Image 1 (cartoon, helix red, strand yellow):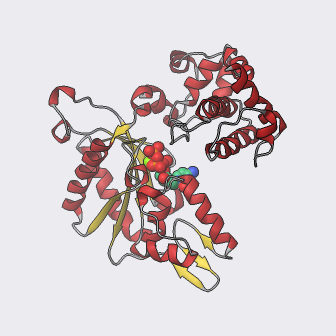
Image 2: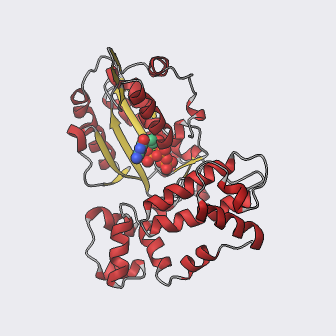
Amino acid sequence: RGGTKEKKPSGPNADTIKLLEEMADEHVLSDETWRVQSYRKAVATLRRQPKKITTAKEATALSNIGKSLAEHIEEIVSTGQFQKLEEARREPSREALKIFCNVYGVGVPTATKWVEIGYRTLNDLQTKARLSVNQQIGVDHYDDLLTRIPRVEVKALGDHVKDVAATIDSSVELIIGGSYRRGADASGDIDLIVTKNGTSSTQDLVPFLDKLVDTLTKEGFLTAALASHRHDGGNKWHGCCVLPEVAFPGPKEEYLPIWRRIDFLLVPQTEIGAALIYFTGNDLFNRSMRLLARKKKMKLSHRALYGAGVEEGKDERKIFEILGVQWREPHERWC
Ligand code: DCP
Ligand code: MG
Ligand code: MN
C-alpha cells in the first residue's frame, strides 16, 4: 500500500514537492492528520505553479500555504535540506513504525502501540505479540502483500476467476474494477465486481458467491479469508489468492506463488452504474463526486445517486449527466 502519491513530482517545484511529500508521510506515521492535510494541500498548490517558488513571501501569497509551510519551502530551496524531516527520520523507532504500518490490516494506532511495548521487528510480532487472524496473515505474508500485482497478472487472476464462475452460472458477469479499471500498470489488489442481469438485490447473488468461494478455495486458488468479510449483509468477500502456475502469463521459470489480495463485491444490476463509479475510484475522485452531489442536494453512494427527485443506480454515464459533470473515462479518474 504505497501511499497516495500517484503522480511523480515534476515541473519547476519538483524538488520541494518531494521533500514536502516525505514530510507528509512522516506526519501520517505520527498520526497528525491535520498536518498531513495541510502538507498535501500545499503540494497540490505547488504542482500548479508554472514557476519555481523560492521565497517564503512568494509562497504565502499562494492559496493553501501558511506561514510555517512557506518558511519550510524557503529553507528547502535555499539550503537543499529540510531540518524537520531529518529530525523525524533520526527517531530510532521510526523504522519499526514503518514496518508495522505496512503489515496488512494494521493502522498507525496499532503500530504505535507495538512500538511503545518495545517490539521492533516482524520477528518480535511473530514471537511476542498477540495478533488477530488478519494481522497474522499480514505478518506471515508481509513481503507478498506489499508487492504490487503487474497488470498482466491482474488480468490472468481475473480470467481464472471468470472461467470458474462460468462453470457455476454462465450469466454472471465479472468486471475488474479498482486501479486496474483506471488503467494502472500495477495494482495493490484485485477488485472483482460481480453482477448479473435481472438482479435487484445483493441477496440474489449471495448463493453464487458462496459457491464461487467454495470452489476456488477447494482448488487452492483462494488461500485465506480475511475477517469482517461479511459486511453490509454479505455483499463483500475479502481474502487472498495465488495464481495457478498454468495461468501464469510469463516464462515458467519466473513463476512464483505470490499471495495476492482479492476482493469480491456483489452488485445487483440495478446498482451497477453507481457501483462502477465507486469501485473504480480513485478515492479522491469519489470524494469530489460525492461532494458535488451534496452541493446539488443529492447523495451519491456506491448504490445510487438520489435525492432532489432523482434516483439513478444502473447507468454510470447517466450519473455523470445528472451531476452535470463531463464524462470521464476510467483512466481519467486518478483525482
Ligand atoms: N474506495 C474509496 N474509498 C476508500 C476505499 C476504496 O472510494 N476509502 C474505492 C475507490 C477505489 C476502490 O474503492 O478505487 C477500490 O479500493 P482499493 O483499496 O482496492 O484501491 P485501488 O484499487 O484504487 O488501488 P490499489 O491498486 O491500491 O488496490
Ligand atoms: Mg484495488
Ligand atoms: Mn480492493
